[in-house]
Length: 403
Image: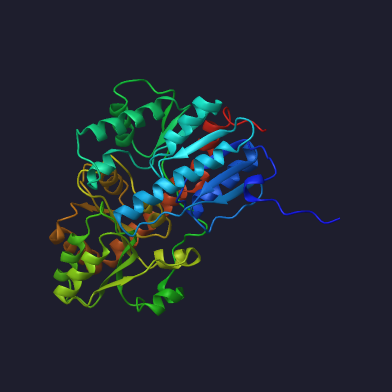
């Protein structure tokens, strides 16, 4: 006997122990969630990242992808994903635990809505702090009615959560200020992590992408990722101009974002031959592209040091790159890089200091090798999946029950 196909809005009912809401994920995040599902019970990941796949006890559903081409498209893609995730949550059976990342920013409010409507317990993962980031990129003005309303909405979502996880002590302090002293049930600092099995140091002679891009005999200064409005990279272009006469050094930018056209225009105007731009690489080539970086640039725009801690820090450590942090030396990122002795930190606009650091590393290859060795060792010891898995499991286990 034949059966009729099931329409998307008539999915067979299934109960989940927990549901994860996160529009843009990394393969490392997907693997950690899948591993937690094996321990905690069946989970559902709602994401806009099309590479994610269901496995084991983890089911993946794909919604609207993040569109970073310009500010209007970014905001629209955030809204579409939040609406789609809300519709998916409305179909859920029982009362699964929700884990809402600030990616996009309205997801904690979605979780709060379902707590009030259907008593879903939830936790919040704060990767970026809003609305402060919206103020920084010019969406709203500091102190305006809109900003105050968004701040209160964010505080309410944090206050209603079973726990709030963020990435650094400065970010935790910022969240405490945002809630105006209202005690949260639990505020935890759990750092980001990298897949230290997939991301490994790779000698350029063994890296096909190094051959393809002509990097086998270069000291490669690599920026990989989003070139967004929040990233100040013009100082790197200034450093490249100062080092243009040194044939040993080349600067690679791999990725896209709002500031890429301006950076390319500046390079063209200066007629720099030691700076090259490439589009995002497929996820399966990410271990090759990240391993190109003898020196990896991790950038924070001035004024955002307390709002986020770039996840690319950990993937750069995993492939054994020395870190050139463009941030205040007193920020969490700046202190991390210098105290762990894996690189240097300079203001993003200090092209002279950036150039001097790169020049010194080119002149002292043994010192560069020491930085890179320490970077890899630190990633394995403190920022691998295994290192953060225990913390996440201990936090979730009392709250996530098999359906």
